Amino acid sequence: MKAPFSSPILAMTLLLSPAATVQAEEPVGVDLGNQGVSNFIARLEKDRKAHVAFIGGSITQKESGHVGKVSAWLQREWPDVEFTFTNAGLSSTCSVSGAFRLQRDVLSKGQVDLLIVEFAVNDDQDAEHDRKTAVRGLEGIIRQYFIANPKGDVISVQFVNKPMLEKIQLGEEAVSASAHKAVARHYGLAIADVGQALATKIKEGRMTWENDYKNVHPSDKGYEFAAGLIIDILDKTVSGETPTRVALPAPLDSGSYFNAVAIDPQKLDWLGGWKWAPVSRDLLPIGGIREQYEAYHALRSDEAGSHLYYAFQGTMLGAFVLAGPDAGSLEISVDKGEWKKIQLYHDRYSTGLNYPRSVILADDLPRGYHQVAIRVSEKKPERSQGKTATILFFEVNQ
Figure (cartoon, rainbow, N blue to C red):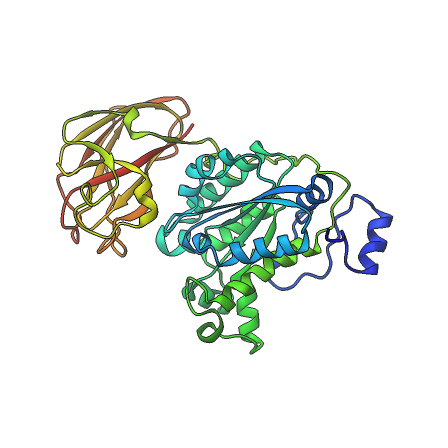
């Protein structure tokens, strides 16, 4: 078993204040927040078993990245603890997608004692979210998690791409990273800011992007660097005697997606032109298909004018889609209002791939019930080869 403290100074402080969380000098990029991960450490010491879940995009999906390195460290440091690890990384997904798949991919696996979440890069370069949407996505994840386990812990990780790093070096910050850290601070969460830490190392002449970090998906050394920040949080936290309930503050944004529900497309009514089938080459004749999405079924139409109808209670309606080279646009009318067009085709990523993405069809709706009509648009996006819509699930913030 790992000792609950690693120095005489920490030991003295712990004896003086048994329930205190000690915050030793933190490296650049590490913020222990209100209490580090003291509930999680207490769970290890008290129960000798713990469930750690990771959620994010493809940066998380890579098993040998920070997921594998942090998991291996925990097992080495706590050899008598029975660990369960869940990797809910899914390529190209953003924090909005994360909010709507958290229940299925994470919370349904049993009580999660520590959630490690990253979406800053995908919210920046893939989804191109504004600040409001980045806040609503990540806060949706955080609040759902603490509602499910009010004695749990979260580490918010901000990975980095080259443009995000360059902003930091200019004294600025990417919208997504700034929004995610604002959410983390609102909830007093521990933060591992990989971009800020990397920028500091580069300024000191101790690392370079090209040789040490390399890419959006870091080199092994880059992953080791990021994992080290997470491990610093784990290692510098001192637990109390038992996990304590986290008091949730009021939401940072009342429209955040913490009442997120994924809706099976079969629950909608449709008129002709739609096909419900497994994700495969038969359903998607052109464009790459990532293997992990072949476990899904999808609702697909390649006919302009195909309609869907749905009644729901909530403030937001979205769709998680595969947008390939032939993806078109959807048009939506809420409560018999004007039709609004939403492009599914992604101008950067749909060219050769059935690109997974969440699209927001309607948001900031009045609370209550709504009737929605959805149709495939007659007009295709300029660069698209077609007018198709391929929907894995709908998203409702109830």
